[in-house]
Image (cartoon, rainbow over all chains, first blue to last red; front, side):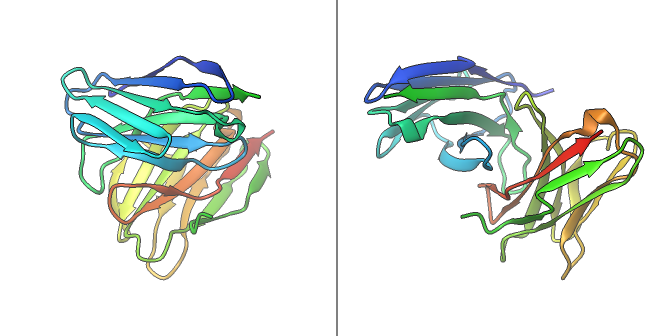
Length: 112
Length: 111
């Protein structure tokens, strides 16, 4: 059964600092990775997706993917208190209908 | 704000009672997913539909779970005989392609 492992389980960073979150899939058939963010009491919202090896940047958020190791990482620079949330990594075998398998998430707290 | 509408927001049932929740996917999204998120934030995929047809589903928890997505009606997820372990946040998501757009969820508490 496909597993998605995330680390660390929780992370505290100072306001303005860099947060780095990790995610690895155990299924070599996985093609697509997503990062979702879920604020407390809210539903998950897609933050970034990555399907190709390399790096993708959107504003303060950068995501890396190494397909050989099935490892993706999310980096948040200049972290803000509003970034405090549960960050969920999800992976799928691709295709528009494929189910996503989620990790347990990293709980990020940004302290001012 | 999410355009996936889930009702009710909260549902409280006794053990053995039937629990039913509904989801209206975002207009134009042909694919609908149901996930269960437990108190440890673990997501469990339940079922997905494309245009009313089931694409994939887990062994629906000893057949206590059923779901449908009829045309021109809300999608629904029903638990025939609720158990304490079913207490969780049930999330519906719709998708135009790869990205899932989640509703606010139905939080089920089974007493």
